[in-house]
Length: 390
Image: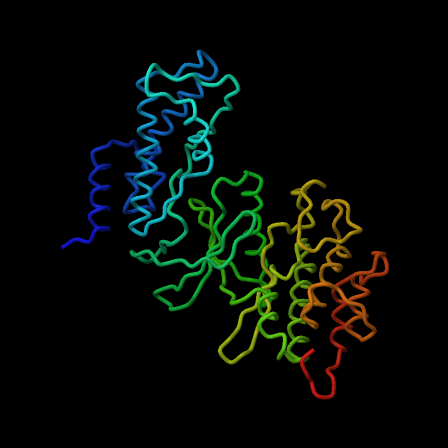
């Protein structure tokens, strides 16, 4: 006997099998095997209404009675049917642009006599070339597999979410970084550039990326167990100086490599340095999140108002002016955390403190001018007599 969830899904499929959809919308949902036709039909209907409303907003400001009732019924169907899917364990999201459009239309839509489009109504952005309905990132379809595999959320940033999954063929865990729905075109461009830069870089201390999926705006990449912040926080009481030094040097080797490739990271932080842990206990540091990075020959420059990053040099007024000495400032903060486990800078006179002071000097001219100079000093650091935890 079918379960309630199975019956609920069967009813939804039957309901939408009776509704037509055009090839222009079907092509947007080719990756969605189970509910592609449902999403295509709903998307097409929404587009018809939103395009008509945009037109009426420029003419009579009157949306016909029959169309108003039909749109209200469609909105109810979307709400009810997506809730039914959620109860069946299938979480589907509507693109935020269309969710906003529905919320802006509902207050003035009427069941009788037509509806008056407000004078100050702002056009709804019409989505024609990307899906408006998407399963929340709970599964991923692999190129050489028929079945979807489960995704687990492992991180989230301003423009993208990161999930992990175990490849059933290789038994290896990978990560998927997927751009958030509805992000600005410039942010999506930044997301794609991040992949291109990381794909070009090839070094043991850089996260490896594999393939970009244009249809879903996501890419596969090497999975790492922890951020640097989480790794040290969990082990700070027992972490030996020698281990901290190895982590620090791997971090610096990675940065020296990208600087040699004429790339500035511009967002060095405890979250953007990852740690891969092996069963033997060995660890490898991996630089990640190159979304704000800058290549020497690139004209993709952000303005002063877009200056971001979790560790910012107080001497830097604009990301456009960012240079190696500004990166050195952030590196100093990260090194301090690696050796002490403390996120706020503390003053001292020991060799580590002296290195950090020089990295974060108020005068950029007094800082290390290259990561190679910094590596030379870190390599001379010696543990205490017992190699005790810092």
